[in-house]
Length: 605
Image (cartoon, rainbow, N blue to C red; front, side, top):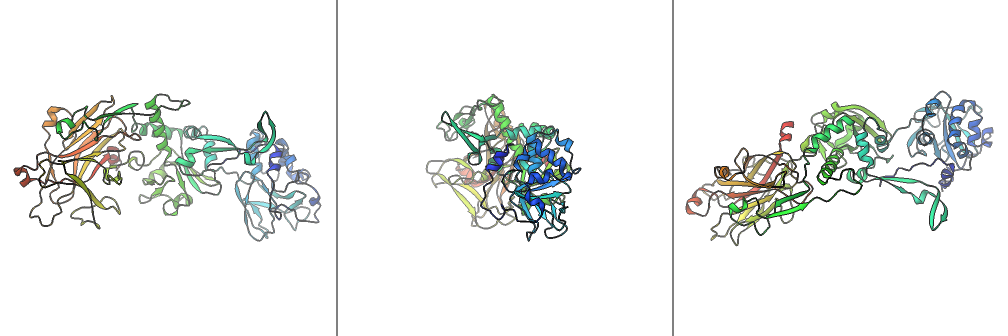
């Protein structure tokens, strides 16, 4: 879970959390320097070059912290290296977290250690202590000045730690989560959405217990933990982890609004939806009944919004929720993912051949457009932030993917089949072609894909033409180009392969929750009895795998996220068991895929 400790200003909390088993780090070395007889606070107070730093410490009560019996290392910036007046206008909590705790660490960190080190600061940042055993000693790339009373060393040994004087303060850098929280005015829209998932809990283990009053444990100093389920669970990231490396994309308010308006149109819901249940007893084998608007009708409903939700309308709530989830689902990238994301870390410009992989494991292209949309790249303590004026990823790769029935596989329906309608005793099998097919027979559209299909099996005595019906899952409220992939008879002993003669019907729901049934005609869908009767059947699939364009259709409502589906029925246009039909047309149905490609994806290409 995400942890962001809210640092309490009282010095008592810091003292209480100081126990350590690292005695060598928590012990100040003996020295002849007079400073070794004074506390860190006394050494800072008596150094005229640190008067500005001293004033800041006093303001927030850190004079008492650095005067207490606890071992710290302090890198104190000299006067003039920071603006004390600017800090006067900043809240105490922000001064502590972003300034003082960025200059103070637990334990003694010595300049004579053999190697450069990374120091874990009180604000949990990781800063580099470099140039040890040389005259180039530096902290976070800021030069450390020699001890004026003992120029052979750089530190001022104190009774409770080590003091270094630096030419400038170390630079505070936000981590990915902190940076989002600081985007007020420029990216409020994203900030408000992310903050909605925050939950604050008491960290009992690190809080200082006080009295028990009326049976309730009270705390003298409380450490709070912020957990954000969007970041950790839905985005699969730890943006506040200082020991990780991420790039987070932060859309401006204008970019957020543009993306919301564009994406929300794909998620138009109605609170209650009727759909045709293909397993319903009313759905028989008669073609006319399956085109009926009421056959097999089943009703589902969206769950109501939470009581504290800002939007209480059921349909509007789910449109808003799913739209924003898709807007953020592709905004975080691990910079340690070297196969895809290495250019994010080094800042190299993208090319058309590049691909990114998000923490949600989606592969994304169109990356030169990401460079063009980037207004600023900000270095973070755990990676980078990109301020973008547009969310430029292709709809097909994000919120409106191509739908393939063969992708919706289960053990029972490996090619997405909902049911088979045949004569009694008939069924279907799933066939997989070993190896890669010959290009003259079939060209697969995806790497490492196998060629497979669902095939009806027919007894010799059958006198009914089979039908295959498919649920289409994940349909958005948008326009699709629909194609059907058929497979020919592969019996090499046949003298001549026969074509299919097919009708392809569809059933879906409109915006008024009315069932619409229709038939593809190669361009669109015909939905009235008069026009359906005039649709000519498709003849296809005689010699090779055929990808048959069925037509274009617009779905008025979205099915994503609910157990309701439109369906597509593939059936013979004639009774293929009549002697006249047997001579001309293939009897067995072999369907490899039904593909719905959003029209927006075609336009983007």
